[in-house]
Length: 399
Image 1: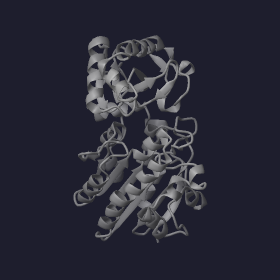
Image 2: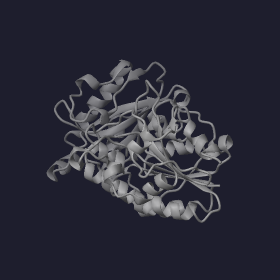
Image 3: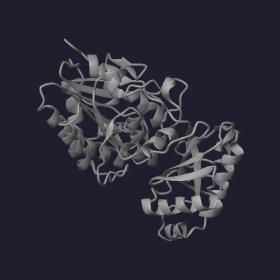
Image 4: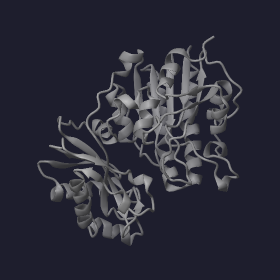
């Protein structure tokens, strides 16, 4: 059996006023996803357990078959795995966003999607001026970076994801708890360094948002996840542009495939990802393709580009993968977002998301399109969400 998992991150949405009350899935031209719904079946999955934050970290663990209540140790540790950063027993790692702060508000959690060369220069300067034997800055991708803190056993701090507070005052969302003085100090001192940095002066001159501060969140210790192949007997390769999905994939033993031009944004190399997935199916049992663009467009409040991202995913990834799968005797495909990132809210929510499944021994239901409503109307609701992966791989709607 050959398997494919397609994850358009954050793609689920609420009805969009500018699109006659349609969601992004409903407004988009996605014939291949609709084919999955019509020839296979739709369902609804609860990827974020009650009481947990609706982040891609928690939700993705559910998507790939791991109970977040057992295995979740924080977002940053998963990204650290992607960067091959080893943590000592008493060491914590924080996600370190480069952000744009107004006088007292979170103006942009991505600092205008700062370029990689600019980000690397800023992080290097922060390491030189703020780093020491205990604290170290690690370069990531774009606005997404990491900080490790040694001798952190006494740090019990609560932090707010910056993408949860766009345009809001930061005063009520600063780190709190034991050890928060250190975290706040790093953030404050970073602004003193970055505010008038030459890179930010140039960005302002160009009308771009300056990366004038860091924002720390998502901290945790190193996870220990059981091997996916040992659990399910399936060899998997994964394609993604973001360190979070990469870190989870590496933690469970998946092989990574790097695609030139994969950016984690609307301009990513969709066709390259699709072709890489097609080629991987000749070598492994399962390929997983993660696409960040719909999530970023949700955070940007950009409905038009969220719809465009879905259409590109459908054309350049879902379509070619479906065609390749059908060249094998037995195959299955599963397509689902990890969580909703509604355009109107510009942040993640914990609502259940639709999934579509098609292929060998998957008995079709009455679904016609790949939409949130079709998922809600289905008779297949998966909660807890981590059970879907075993269902997809091992049982399904078998006759």
